[in-house]
Amino acid sequence: MLQINHLYKSYGRFQAVNNLTLHVPKGDLFGFVGPNGAGKTTTIRMVCGLMLPSAGNIVLGGVDALANQKEVKKQIGYVPDFFGVYDNLKVKEYMDFYGSMYRMNSKEIARIADDLLELVNLSDKKEVFVDTLSRGMKQRLCVARALIHNPALLVLDEPNSGLDPRARVEMKELLLNLKSMGKTIVISSHILSELSEMCSSIGIMDHGNLVTAGRIEDVMEGVFGSNQLVITLDGGRETALRIAKEHAKVKVDSAGEHEIRLSHTMTKSEIAKMIGVMIENDVVVTGFHKQEGSLETLFMRVTDNEEGQKGGKENAAESDC
Ligand SMILES: Nc1ncnc2c1ncn2[C@@H]1O[C@H](COP(=O)(O)OP(=O)(O)OP(=O)(O)O)[C@@H](O)[C@H]1O
Ligand SMILES: [Mg+2]
Image (tube, rainbow, N blue to C red; front, side, top):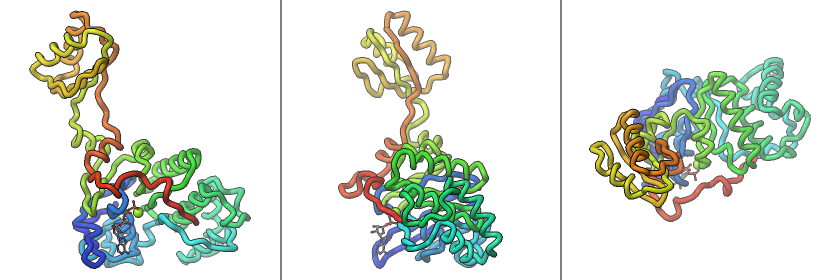
């Protein structure tokens, strides 16, 4: 659906995006993450045709986006990180305004706007002024207006910033709903736990470079390795350690009082056998499971941990519709 090839953007001598190549398949919900200043918004703005790259190309639905901006823009719905405020516009008028920008006729706008407002759960707010809506409602309205022309690709730049937990859950459900309707979605966010719950793929940017990208499981496996095992114990630690260390396919990564972490190349039955040997030798095994890396640990592992680049922005960013 979206193919970015060797994309560069420099602001004067500063390289904000550096040789970025990325593929987002059709129907994917793609999470775009990276520390503040990584180059996410810059990339998003180039994809949405709001800024020209210094070099590289963007192909959307098989069409060269830079050479066919007008055509390609019809395929994109964009929810920016900061919105302009439209005073004295009611929700319905706001949708009319955006629909008319896409040269849709008023009948068409009314029908689609009704459906979209229902989708984002704002049907009862049609006659309400936009600036009186809550932040979560405004964000949902922005998603609705980004969909007015039925784009194939929806791009959202930090749509969850400043939202309370309920509004975030509602936004997540809305995006999953849109994915199930066949939309391809690219979302940038600093709220990694939410991205890991809804995204099928991710890309991590740092200092203008795409550090890693792909299906979340594949990226995790590439960084953490697939075979890590955690054994929890309540006695027999030394015996368990000896058995693990003696096993030809096991390397002990760490050993706490009640927990041993291993890297291994064992099959499932070999794992069961080793745990069995531990139990036969009076180790009190209270549990064992494959170690799963989190998106947070992945993020910390692959991005530069410089001062000033740390921390999420979710509490800092303010946006309005
Ligand atoms: N108009 C501009 N002129 C000069 N530098 C810019 C401009 N816009 C962005 N930059 C710089 O480019 C880099 C990337 O910025 P960008 O907004 O793309 O980052 P981001 O990943 O979206 O960060 P955040 O998570 O804070 O939103 C930053 O160092 C920023 O200061
Ligand atoms: Mg940004």
